[in-house]
Image 1 (tube, rainbow, N blue to C red):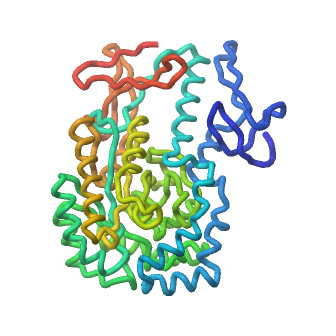
Image 2 (spheres, helix red, strand yellow):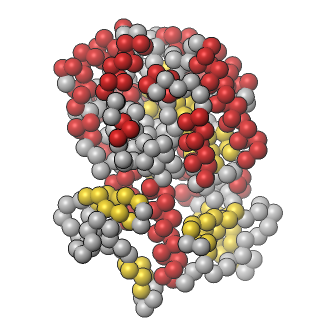
Image 3 (spheres, rainbow, N blue to C red):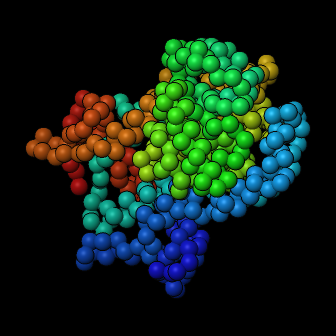
Amino acid sequence: MSEDAGYFKFGDKILFGRHSDEESPESPSPDLSSADHLAHLPFDADEVVDNLRLERYVNSAEQRRLADSFVGRAYYFVRPLLPVKVRRHLQKARLSSWRELKFPQWPVDRTVDHSMNDLLILSGLAHGVDKVPFIWFWPEGATGAAIVTHDVETDVGRDACSRMMDIDDSFGIKGSFQVVPEKRYEVKQSYIDSIWKRGFEVAVHDLNHDGHLFRDRDTFYKRAAKINSYGKLFKSEGFRAAVLYRNLDWYEALDFSYDTSVPNVAHLDPQRGGCCTIMPYFVGNLVELPVTTIQDYSLFHILNDYSIDIWKRQIELICESHGLINVIIHPDYSTTHRERAVYEQFLAHLAQLRDERGIWTALPKDVARWWRQRSKMTLVEDQAGLRIEGEGKERARIAYASQKDGQFAVELCKADQPCQVKN
């Protein structure tokens, strides 16, 4: 293996890591051997996938440098007082070059998911296996999953939560509200209870939303202890960092079931990067639910787009791979009739996908619980065929992965029919 990690191509995909192919370092190719039934890879698949999902291909410390600079500290000090119009101009100036970024791929990056598909095809070819059984991604055979999350940043957003819940309920979709515990606005227990009582979810949103949670390890660990205590007070299972700042190597200090701070593609976020997957994944003991669509703030105030066209493009790409749709809608910014109308169009589209294409619309905590259950289930073979064992098995379905004309394909078994092993 090379000592230094770098970008290279695996088929038509760009990966990042170390590899051993000296003849073609920019495009190493695997070697299939029928003698030992192995696919010999010129790179470590685990390492390469982790490099993407944990964003080790970017220098996160460098990305956060602006927040810790004098200019950054001054900006976050006055940010609550700045009108949206002023903030919009400052952010547009900083993000002006986002269209020039080639990696991750906008508007949705599926590098991790497609690379895993290719690796499974290679393994099947090496072993002479036509189909590989697996536990389907979502419960009851849902074709995909969708969660709606609401970051509450100011007292204006806090006071608009009831109206936001009314809108969500009108489409039969429950969402989560990410609440800032300290300094931004008063958080009464009655406010927290009002969200839970209506069947919605409360998650902890940073500590005080000052942009400095990840300034250094000591600061993070001290704040994480307080964040964890607020999690217990709010009965929250989930966490999201302010501004989607993140350092996944420090997440061991968080005592939550899941996190949802990592964008799939972060071209329009202050901290660039992205996890390059549309599926949940584990960061230590945390289930990461990646943000897979553009935020409402970026859509309205950075791109000046008041349609759902980008959301629909992203959702279609996610649905092609049976992934997770995760959108952030701020009660603070969806305040005008024009913004609310766009959000209602989005919810109508999501409800249509649920009713016509079998998308599972759920609370984030339920998606995280399912992904945790699914990771512990096992496939057992007997004379009758295959069955699933483990907690939650009654909701699980068996599927097959295969290669069709060189392309990865999946086939879901019907719930009332046993799946037979076919090689």
